[in-house]
Image (cartoon, rainbow, N blue to C red; front, side):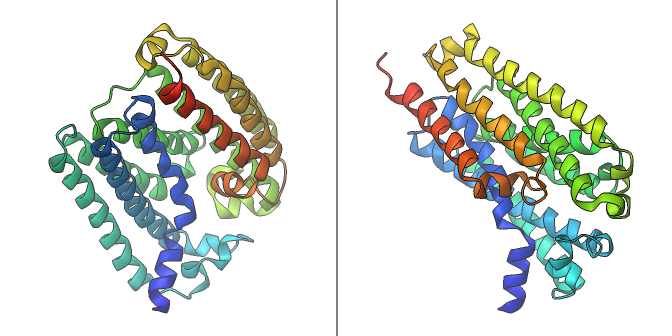
Length: 301
């Protein structure tokens, strides 16, 4: 049982919150109350949880030596030696295959789904393997790869229910992911100082000034892109409301709040942890979601 617990810890279930992006399609397509669409999205979410959990284990196996130099990551089961590499390897393979099997099931079990859902999940798996082995050591490409992972989650959610996604929604996802990715790199440099390059080669190529410039660009771009998304005639016609712009203040506050957390040593190295442990940020996200649901599903037409 202890080995199983350590495997679950290594799969980092707290990080699975990122996979809620698969629900973007079912919410913004107006099918959140459609049982079949919601079930397909839930299974898609489960597929990504299993596959991403497998990747986290694989990453910890590959990085176990460098993780021992990190003030926080050294406590992970594989880096600390509590979980053997052999047991972790088997668990990663089982989780990855199970995740792909769930994606394959969705493609056949639901009329609106297609084999593309399996393809998207497989591409995500291969991309994350490439990231772990190579891409995370390449400056800028490391953050762009992480951003691509977020986009694939959104695309998978759309494919699972055969919903056409707005280009603006995809652009917003890319920019928000880049913003959080550069923020995470900024925090890692702040936390690790001179040991940053020992933990990851690409961190030696970044400087706080450069990252601040990238964060500034992606911050402004994300806010503008979301504002344009809410005012797009295509989106207004598709969603049946022109009032989505009222959610913009929640987005602006959430982005600025995360930007504030980036410059603190105790939180923003992990965007998911920041979201789940910072009350102001959490409240802004919840209020944004509630407002979106009211506008899309309960506003008089």
